[in-house]
Image 1 (cartoon, helix red, strand yellow):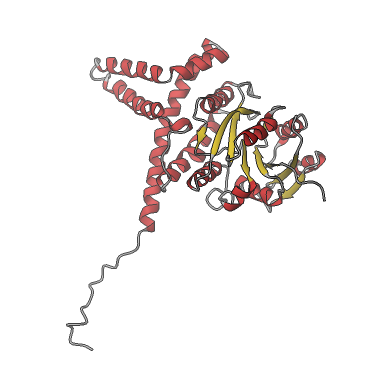
Image 2 (cartoon, one colour):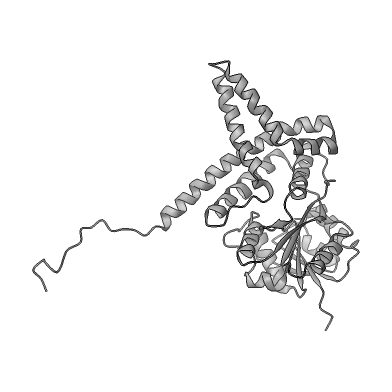
Length: 349
């Protein structure tokens, strides 16, 4: 029998294309080598399974497209490593990514899971893609190391802990969504320790468009994340749920109301101007980050797109709240409206 590897790297893929090839090639450059590679093909039609076999991966194929939650669970079932390391098929690890994961678990024996972030050099050159990936990098780099969530773009968890939690929830998340956040919340509720290891980074290769960004942020993340929180999970200030983010959402809608009011009362423009300065002040660190990374022109283009982000965050929350309320109504027991007969006094035995 071959020796048990320290890590089992699990990659779910659906029509991964050139990005998937880059992902596999990057693994070959890793300085840490005590790992096995498991690729679960989720119904690809572009030869992704054959490509994984070409790179020597242990492979599994689902019966049609079933979503990354089930695919990762299948990968974990095949794994033998002490750690399960999840990597997205459109991410390329850096040469020291795996080594830094191993170093974190060695330095913190009580650690159950960790996750990293995208680096600050995205693999796409279009504006929306640069904005989205750099925004993700900024959020993770400026959040607390003591985390209460999880991320499968680049995340590692002890296999025993993962199996005890019964893995991801494919029944609830049958498509790419917040199955990783759900797992992190459940691990935290089980008194597990999760670390945001900011030095553990991968390069994201996906070329975002405005349409795909809105779809992902609203339908795949914002709404289900709201429902997850309202379903009984403790609301935290992790990642992009910090206080200044919530204040910014209120300020955006106040700004819109002030601009509408200014059509009738020009003095309302002063309120609108004040709210604009408030938004700039609350998010100045982020805008300065974009300025430092890509220059003034890029940072100025980011501001309206970031304010749009706050605008649709409120929409996501409202939709999530309404769906949660609907679920609560459906879960309530049906109370009969028929009059009850008091058999003790109706003259019958």
